[in-house]
Image (tube, rainbow, N blue to C red; front, side):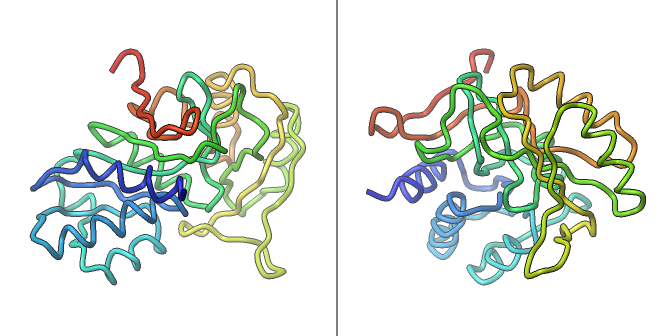
Length: 224
């Protein structure tokens, strides 16, 4: 059983003809985008707004028409993955480095759907390192302020060099162990000068498609 493929393709059921769709980034939503590509070839009419250059390239290869925020009035549904999901549907995202664009698109969408295999379900957020996007200028001072909140920090590297996001920023991967108050931590991190945003998505997911007890399940946020 390929959980990623099953949950990724299940999310396509929420996409209807004529919609503007936020296209997430990652190994699970990859299957969503692949399925959308097939449906577009069969006549589905949608416009995608990608959360990363990687997703943009994949969509182009599959023939999915793309648009920017300048070209669309709204995003009907955004579909994306997650690194962790707690019982209240709060998330840690950004393992793939696209957290800022992902959060902008999720916030703009009428409906935000998360696709996640069973390994991503946790009782409390924090086992997966929390990505924090920071501007390069003065990042050493930014890191000092983040440490004051209790995090153990590491500047993300790739191929022996400092990793750069699509926005030209750095990512600090931060271990806060158990995040008991995610909304408070999200707010406090974003108050630090130099922090662009962080990978806590609190109260944003409307639905999470995942596996519970080996069964494909859709969990709906209580106030949706």
